[in-house]
Structures are given as C-alpha cells and as structure tokens.
Length: 156
Image (cartoon, rainbow, N blue to C red; front, side):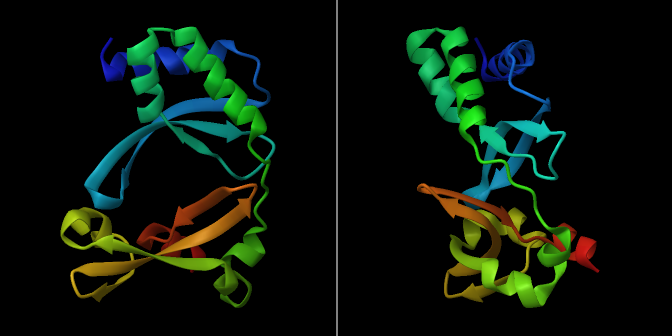
C-alpha cells in the first residue's frame, strides 16, 4: 500500500471509530529541515485546539505488520490520552502574558529556507533561531506550535 493510500485508509478507519466529538482531516506541514510531514488533524468540536498526529512512524509500523486495524486502534487510543486543552485567546495574543511561553529552537538555515520565509527568525552562524509557543509540557509530552507570520498577523 502506498503512503498516500495508507493516509486515506487511516482517516476512513478513524472516522468509523468512536473517539468522541471530533472531526478528522488530513494535513501536511513543513517541519524543520525541510521535512514534509503528513498527519491527521483531530478537530475537537468542544475546544479551540486541534492536535495533529503525524503518520510516518505508523506507516513504518504498518509496513512491518501489515495490520491496518492495529494502527487505527493505536491512533484512536493515542488521541484519547491527549490532554484536552482550551487556549485562552486573550492571554494567547497578549504579549505580556504570552512571552513567558515563547521558546526558541535552533534550525539549520540552509535546510529550512522555505520555513524561514514565513517565520520570524534570527540568523546565528549557519543556524537560525525560530520561535514556538509552548502550549503544554506535562508527562514528558511537549505540545507547541510554531510562531509564524500568519499567527503574528492574527494577533494584530
């Protein structure tokens, strides 16, 4: 099964599972080092956050086991364990409160040219400092989102 077919089958399988008040869709995101990642967006209709679970590792598991039902069960189970987060938009867009949640990451400038076109950054030798908003850091799970031009324009 191709990766594209796998993603569609996973989406259909998740839609048949009982995982709560959620709508599902597929997404692709440009990640650091020019990697394109494909995932499932779990749009929880009772909150203003939508976690994304990327599928690359699950596809590798599928290629070994050929067990699509187990992959779908794993994804549904993972979603059920994720914390339900409701962002306070007033605090989120108020820099005086949000600044303590801004974290920095170093990325390779050459490998992230496309990403850097739409993200505030500071060049540092052959690297660039980029910014993320730390949503949650508990139980060893870090949930963050990149600060990019679109987010900055939303806050204006």
